[in-house]
Image 1 (cartoon, rainbow, N blue to C red):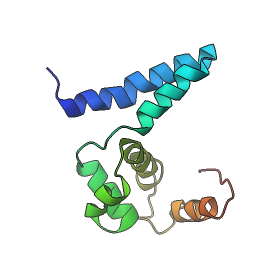
Image 2 (image 1 turned 90 degrees about the vertical axis):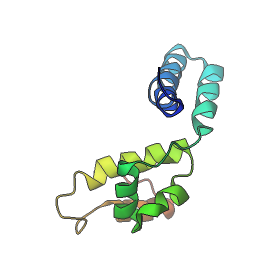
Image 3 (image 1 turned 90 degrees about the horizontal axis):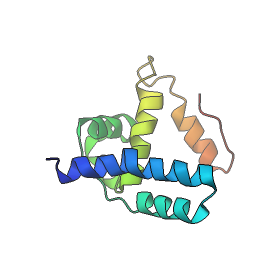
Image 4 (image 1 turned 120 degrees about the horizontal axis):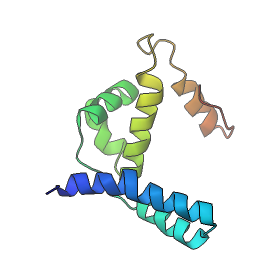
Length: 114
């Protein structure tokens, strides 16, 4: 009834976070590690319009989504950055804080996201 891509999204967005939350709340470090390993190993889903727009905004070219978001985990990260920064930035990128935060992170500090 559902396709392979939708099933993968359910696993990534519902099942694994639920398992990880239960494992964390019960102190089951082995189960938590298994859920995290499964999440880390998720393959990317096909590129969609959100991924293409996020890549265009953050990397300058829509086709870079396949280069930078080449795992399910990285795709989720790219979508989160897009939601946190691109959708909330009313300055059309002129005052975006993400490049500075990424630079600070790369240099070893732990910046707080706005």
